[in-house]
Amino acid sequence: MVKKLHTCYVCHKTFFNGVYWFDSLYYNNFDKRIIRPFCGPICSNRYRDTTDVNDWPDREKPFPKGDEWKLIQDIDYIDYETD
Ligand SMILES: [Zn+2]
Image (tube, rainbow, N blue to C red):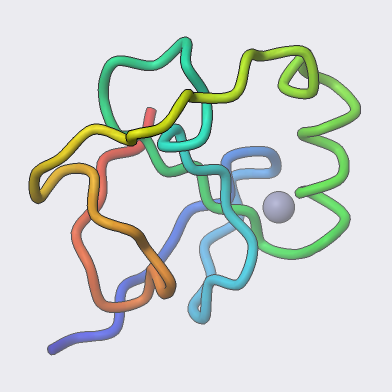
């Protein structure tokens, strides 16, 4: 598989080796799976500081089932939807 090129959700830089990302799996206010990659801790922190993500309600378990909602441990080799 080809390694995926990510686009940082905050600064729009493109990069490989995604380590930081937002995952809508963990928030109740999303009805679809959205991944928002961040190029590093600075953009990840900036996202937390400039949005109200910390106030969003946690998704209650059980989490939704199906391929769209599988646990993601690595975003480099998967197709994901972002926004
Ligand atoms: Zn960035």
